Each structure stands twice: as structure tokens, then as C-alpha cells.
Image (cartoon, rainbow, N blue to C red; front, side, top):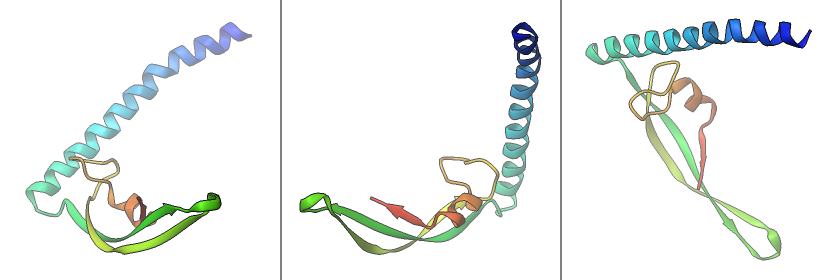
Length: 95
């Protein structure tokens, strides 16, 4: 029974890795086309907070301000920029 599961996992693991590589390669190709058309990047307003530890194991949270963060319009992060769909759902940055 255990050997059957091991064989099944070893059979489908390369397929899973291959699918992930193809998905990333396709996302990269679409992103490169968007770069040439100048539609690859967008901006999202992000709130920045500073967490300051206080006495008695308490923490003070201060709003540092709102900035516009440049993001990549893709499924995966591209060119060291976060992807926009993730950044729109996580608009708070903590320091």
C-alpha cells in the first residue's frame, strides 16, 4: 500500500513541477508583451505603519503615511516588484 503511494507521487511529481514551470514561463511571456505595450505596471496606495515596542510588552502602532507602490500586473512577482492582485489585498505595510 505504501509503495503504491510512493510510486504515484513519484509519477506525478515531475508533471506537477513541469506544469508550474510552464505556468511561470507563460506569465513571464505575457508580462514581457505588456512591458512592450507599456501596460505591465500599475500603482496601488499602501498605508505604512510603524510598530514600536513599549514597556510592559505593549506595542504602539503609528501611521507613517500613505505611499503609491508600483506593482507588476501578473500572477507572479516580476522584476522585483510585487504582483498587483496580492498588493491590493494587503494594503498595510508594517515596519
